[in-house]
Image (cartoon, rainbow, N blue to C red):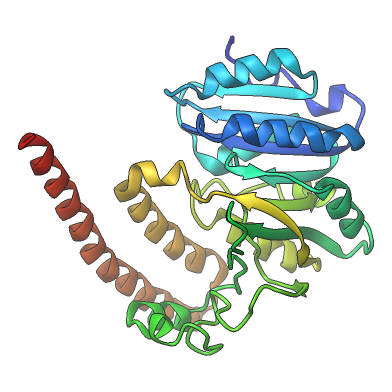
Amino acid sequence: MPESQPGEALADMEPPIQLSIIIVTYHSSSTIRVCLKSVFQELTSTEGEVIVVDNQSTDNTISILDELLAQNSKLKVKLNRTNRGFAVGNNQALEMARGQHILILNPDTILQNGILKNLLRELEKDEKTGAVAPQLQFPDGRLQKTCRRFPTHMDVIYNVFGLAALFPESRRFNGWKMGDFDHKSAQKVDQPAGAAMLVRGNLLRSLNGFDENFPMFFNDVDLCRRIRDKGYTIWYLQEYTIQHLGGTSVKQVKMKMTISSHISFFRYFEKHFTHMYQQPLNFIVGILLYLSLIPRLLVLLLFKGQRTASRETL
């Protein structure tokens, strides 16, 4: 498959359609085939397209995409020569998208039960609804508690000092991760999981998509906060479900991802807490995040060292 070049598939050169599904892949060979087959099946009753941006996968992801590209005219693929991150990949797909609405989807998800029609209907019920998200489930049917409130300085303190883990269902100590919400009812939320979220296309474009200063983590939190700041609401809809395996590509580079998540967490506070009185709190949060990062990295290094030693003794 030849590499796609920037600007080669411009959305404004083709007529608009109802839905664009955008997916960013990286070493997704174990899930992308099943994911896309479920998407194509759901698209039989919906006017839409699928845009996949691959971030330099070196497994069989590209060959699978090549095969599926030849089988389905609704699929478009862009290949990056380097891993440009989740945020950039989604923005590249957004530039190519013709959809009036955009479904941001992870490559380790499986669509089912008319999910696209249902989410589109819910999104279009109220013009002030900016985004909707389904309930995510593991393949065995267990639900994933993925909704979040926007984090505060106190949330960092509660997490670093273990109070969130000690009181997991407390609104006060685990409010950020919504430990007090059972995810079994529809509710307006600050931020659902970015693994599957349907957003109004004109709104997402007006926000210029994802902030690329958050390449992997907290880009979905930042996006949802900007949607809310525009005066729109986001709905979590428990009656519609999607299977989600969860983090298959992230698990491959744990140390790098751990560092990136802490840096992005701090950037979130720097971006959204800008008043003068908040600056000292941002500084304290930065120190706490740095201190909490050290033991995590030591554990990962120790685990890596043990695995290396065990391989050498075989």
